[in-house]
Amino acid sequence: MTHSSEHRCGWVALMGPPNAGKSTMMNSLLGQKVAIVTPKPQTTRNQIVGILTQPDAQVVFMDTPGIHQLRGKMNRLLLQAAWQSMDGADVIMVVLDSNLYVRKPDFLDNDIEPLIEVIRHEKRPVVVALNKVDMFADKSRMLPLLEKLAEMWPAAEIFPVSALNDDGLRQMLAFIKGHLPVADPVFPDDQVSTAPLRFMAAEIIREKLFLELRQELPYNSAVSVEKWEDLEEEGRVVIHAVIHVARKNHKGMVIGRQGQTLKKIGTDARKEIEALVDRKVFLDLWVRVTDDWMDNEQFMVEIGMGAR
Ligand SMILES: Nc1nc2c(ncn2[C@@H]2O[C@H](COP(=O)(O)OP(=O)(O)OP(=O)(O)O)[C@@H](O)[C@H]2O)c(=O)[nH]1
Ligand SMILES: [Mg+2]
Image (cartoon, rainbow, N blue to C red):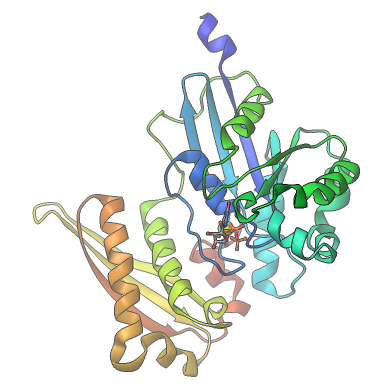
C-alpha cells in the first residue's frame, strides 16, 4: 500500500518549566481537553498521553510535569515522569512562556538550566514553542529572546505561538509531522488518550480544587477515585472520590464555610465529568487527612502520580 508507506507516526514530548502552557498546548493541538490546566505552577503531576489522528499522521503527545529544581519525594516523581517521557520521544517540544522572559530576562537561564545542555546536545529534532505571544501588543519586543534562544540552541526550530488562541500551531504541527518516522498508526483512530476515565475524573476534581484553593494548599492535596459504579439501567455513574490533604488544619479549608468550597469543587467537577462520560454522574466527594502523603511514594504512585 503506497498510503501506509507515507503515513507518519511518532511520539512528541512536551517539556518545559512549570506554567509555560504545556497542557494548554497539548489540548489545543488535539482540539479537545485531555490534560487539566490551571494558572498555578505544577499542575501536571504525571505523563499524560494525547493522541492526534489525521489522515497522513498520528502524533502522540506526552504532556509532562514542569521541570523545576525543587526537592522532595513528590518533585522527584514528577521530574522522573518528565525525563522518562523525553526518553521515549521522536521529537522534543520545549514550551516556554515568552511573556515571562521578555519581562524578566534573568529568569530564563535559571528556569531552563536543567534543559540547556540536554537540548544543546540533542540529536533528535527539537521544536521550541515560544508560547503566549498573544500577550504582546508589540511582538518586536520578543526579538532579543528569539536571538538568545537561537544562539543557545542553534539546531532547534523556534515557533512563536499562542496555545490559548491557536495561533501558529498549524505551522508548528506541520513541522513536527514532517519529522516523525514513517510508520503505521499505533492507536485506533478514535482514541484520544491512554488515561483511564477514572484517572481523568480524579484529574478534573483536582483541577477544580486547584482553582478554588489559595496559596500552597493545592500542592499539599491530591485526589483519588475510590469507587466507580456504572449503573447501566439507571443510565448514571456513581463516583466515590477523596481529596487527600496532608494536615488536619487543611481539611477545614478545603471544606470551606458551611461546606461551600467543597460543594463548589464537587459541582464544577461533576458537570465536567458528566460531559466526559456522557451520562449523569453522582459524585460522592470526601476530604481525608492522609498524613504526610507527600512523603509516601507508594501512595503517590497508587493514585497515578509520576511516570507510567
Ligand atoms: N495568555 C496566554 N496564556 C496561556 C497560554 N497558554 C497557556 N496559558 C495559561 O498559562 C497557565 C498555565 O497553563 P498550563 O497549560 O497549565 O501550563 P503547564 O505548562 O501545563 O503547567 P504545569 O502543568 O504546572 O507545568 C494557564 O493559566 C493557561 O491558561 C497562551 O498561549 N496565552
Ligand atoms: Mg500542565
